[in-house]
Image 1 (cartoon, rainbow, N blue to C red):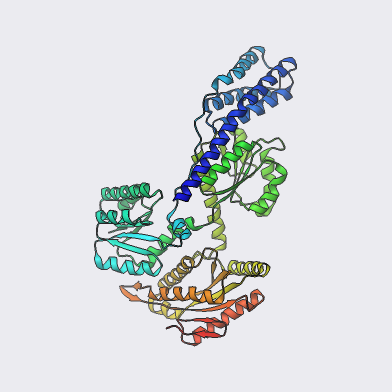
Image 2: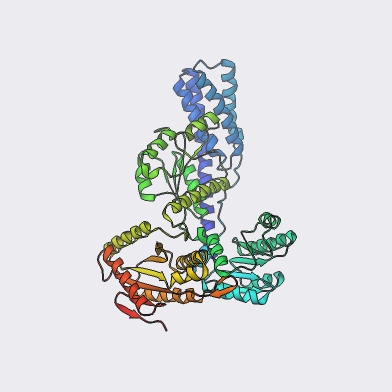
Length: 558
């Protein structure tokens, strides 16, 4: 918390410095504009008028960002007037020019002390906090039925969650103040007012802890009215009791998955370097990685290096028109799905639509509030990542598909050979899976596959990758991990999976797994390491299942 506070303070100081720099340049900016007035008066050339339009456009777009809202508003009105003259392509009417000139000279009176710019810091997420600190995600379960609560507590514990149980909300709040949870799970009656009370308590805890706390409602029925009340109260998930632990764990995993993703990467293309730096700092304060470029020639190399999730671009730049640059970027097939957002002072809807027709996805009009910038970038980046994931992920488990996980293994093997560090491949298979389908039905078999996939994703490290290799078989790729360390990690997963209680028709059952491990320390290419891991898996199966084997070395579970 202290480190985060220090970072926020540093960002605030840097934003204040940028505002001060902008304010310090204003006198010179206005003096240059006034000088151009004299130039046009002595020689009324369209080029001079276009130059004044460009200066006013930049002033209107950046003034409000740095706290000079009145200056920005007046510059916008002056910009619109000069644009009308340029479009008319004729002489400027003398009476209009005199009024416009006096309005330009009056801009200095609009320069008032700015409102300090503040970073739009993002509230730390529970999953990010738990991952960074290598602590288990803490769940606070409020459930009156002690037997049901104990079953959920045990089941969710198998997925690595730390679960505290309270019989009522009052006791839960007392416990939460001493040990704040990452997620609240609350049993509710058919009473919307109680849901509002629950979320109000959550918000109090969130304010105390300085981070968002999701709330999960456990309801007595699935009526539309109750679901609507839960949504209105701000509930994040909704389950109907009785519910099994794998189902709840899967929901919580979906809820927290986005927070465990790497930060969104944003590239900003704007010739106004001070404004671009402000955007960088604002997005950095919101937990993103942002870079800026001011030269068009550096855009494509920076795209290749940064691989951004979103591209922010000014529409008017000295070297080219932003819409043309967007078309150039779209020529490259690898950037077809990159979200491009124009951030410009252009207020004409026809010109905005023309710009969007060049291949952009959104248009934000300067000056833009920090909170609006962060929200727009985050929404576009999240949607783009989800679409990309859908293309590469298995539909049932959400893990990488067969081809994608094999590609990941090849990439990690190449990296391992270059850096002289090991990478380990693990083949995981569900024991007697045909019996599961035959005894409990295919829908239950799908639930077992989803549960194991979820547990693998949750218990493996952030840098690890896991995919559904086929049917009930999975492949995990563990960079910078020896075979011995991989075995210890998989043993923990094996034990936790065996402890999960599945329920079908009111009858409980358990399922186990077997795994085979092979490390790049003993094999040179993708085909060899996969063959070795597969051979080790079959060795584990032949030796009784529910165990881990490393290449040809049998390991019998105790």
